[in-house]
Every structure is written in C-alpha cells, then in structure tokens.
Image (cartoon, rainbow, N blue to C red; front, side, top):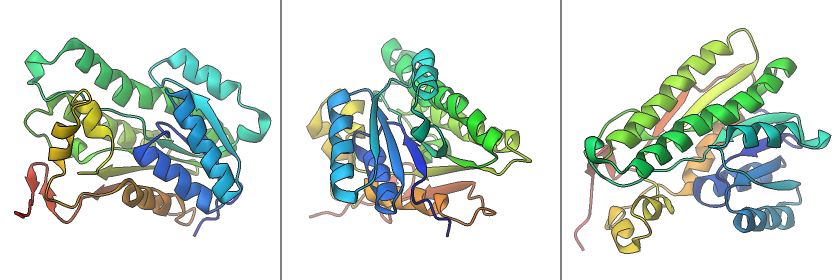
Length: 258
C-alpha cells in the first residue's frame, strides 16, 4: 500500500458528491487536500470540515475548470507547500438534459463539452508537467459507465465521457517511461446532486432516477479512487467500471415494487 500521508491531493468539483467524498477519504489517511469548485462558500465549508475532523491541511480554491487561463494561473500561483501535487482527481463534470443530440440546447451542449472534456484537459495540462518533472504522481479521472455504453437521451453526455476514456488511454501512453500513473474510475448509477443539475433543479424528476433501487453512493466511488491511489507504486490500475448490484447495463436497472 502506497503511503500518501502528508502528500498533496488536488480534487476538482470538491464541494459536494463524489468530489467531497474523495477529499474526505484522502484526508482520513493523512493527505493534505486542495479542493476546487465554482462555488466559493460551499468549497470553503468542506475544507473547514476536513481541517476540523481530520487535522490535515485543506486549501479551498474557487475555480471554473472551463477557464483554461484561470486553471493555469491557480496552479502556477500555489504556495510552495502546495505545489508538489502527488494525486490529481479530475472529478468536475455534468450532464444536462435528455434531449436528442440534434435538438440539444446549445447551452447544454457547450456546458457538457466545456466541463467534461476541455475541463479535464485543462486541469491535467496544468498539473501533469510537474509530475513528469518529479517523475512521480497519479492522475485519476472520474469517468462514467457512459464512457463504455451509450443510452437514449444521453448521446452528448456519453460522447463526452467516451472522449475522457480515450483521453485517459492516450495520457497513459504519453506518460510511458515515467513513474506517473493514470487511472479512470467509471461509476454507473450514483445518487448525488448530479441528476438535479441534469433536470434543471427538478428534484422530483431527479429522485425518480433512484426510486426503488439501491444506487452507488459517493463514498463507494471515493473508496475505489483511494484504492487506485494507494496501490504499490509499480501497480497502475487503468480502469474501474463500477455498478450498483441493481444495475447491469446503462438502461438495465432493477426497481423493486413496494
């Protein structure tokens, strides 16, 4: 098991859901965490909770991963004690709407492409060179089962997650000959705020996604991420596809009749 105590872990989309759970999981083993999100107050609250509960350092940064200049500036301006990033968790992402691809609202199309694809590339491009220079590090993408399968109403979202999967496979090749590891953790149905965002705040519609089934939790995904990151240095976990027991494929979800 790789010891990450006192190491720096950089997590995007860390104010809630999977990102928040990842931050807590790494903090629990003694890592110091850099938490980024677009909402300043929410990410600062998570950082404060982590400092209080786990006694580690937690730095909160307000950051929009779609803004390449802002991403590079934030990484370049990190204080020295935070600059040696050992693990990057690219978690920020979104799904918007369930329209057919040819009728998707332009703001949905651009929102998913900018965050899910460009955002991942921006953050990776800002942090990876330092890892290569130090010949150590680990880049972990939070992918999706949607990067393995396509489902009706999810064409654009699935396309972005397929892009992340391809990017990650190529990134491992780019890192060939270095000690930088590259992984992807690809969950299926996870109960977070994800569906509320997808349905423009319609909580009733979002709740229906998880009705009468037992989905994954953010902590389940964080556990897989932590497992990847703590394997011995010579072990690279390329990809984990994880589903709840009630899910067998993109649209095959067992719902119990009450």
